[in-house]
Length: 313
Image (cartoon, rainbow, N blue to C red; front, side, top):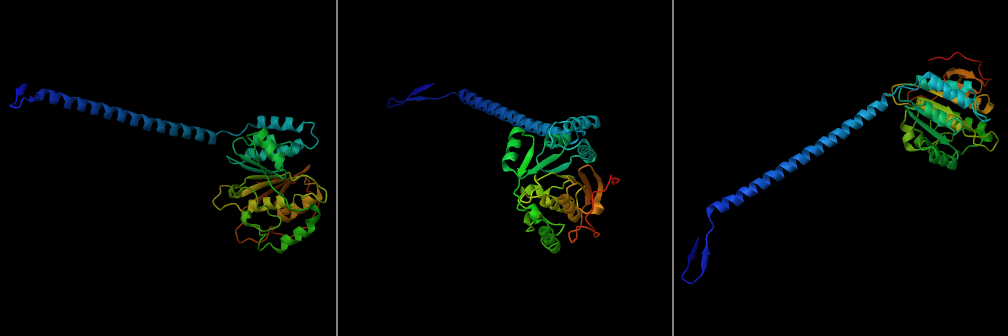
């Protein structure tokens, strides 16, 4: 409706129906936006819950995977032992470790000193657990990890010499109550035979099985295996009180070598030797109290390896 004013200005009036129609359109627009927003949020929440559920199911399935069957494990050991590599372990030696892995509570934590012909075998046999390799060669550890990404390997620098073994063992005995005690966190240790430059996380792991098959070499200037055996002994005895299994299986390869046998007598102890066959010594160590200051309960003399001692549980 138009009205003419006295000054010639025209006044335009809008009908109330038009104003109501505009307000209604805005309400409809608001309702549609709200609906779409709620639908988007609901979809987002559902998707996140679905992903979380799937991740949990996958993780649970991985955690409860059964161990390798005995027949598969035997086949792997058989073909590994029949290699032409002269540095390989015998079938008997491999089978001792394979059986220990089969009996290990799942998942199994397996620490190996030395990258050897059997590296892929150990990684395969412990397919449910964590297998970590420690080697003295930085380049070889990097090469293995690059070639086999599924292998977890680290290098460590040994500061010992095989020719220094008598002096090193004598020094350890003098410091059993202090820096070289059998229960400690080696990360902060100043003991000459304690390896304190491994990745920090490895000192927090409760190892179920430890294999000492390195470092290489038996000449006077070689590092020898004193530090690896001592470190294995401390890690086994320093398990946390809340860990499920208080025992640790420790295997020492080349146990027929005098130096390795003597070092094992000092730190793994003859009373813990459950089997010695071929070139393998098998010890079972139990967790000790933090106040402990002696590695062995009884005195001992260095002797030749026992013949087929009956294994204990």
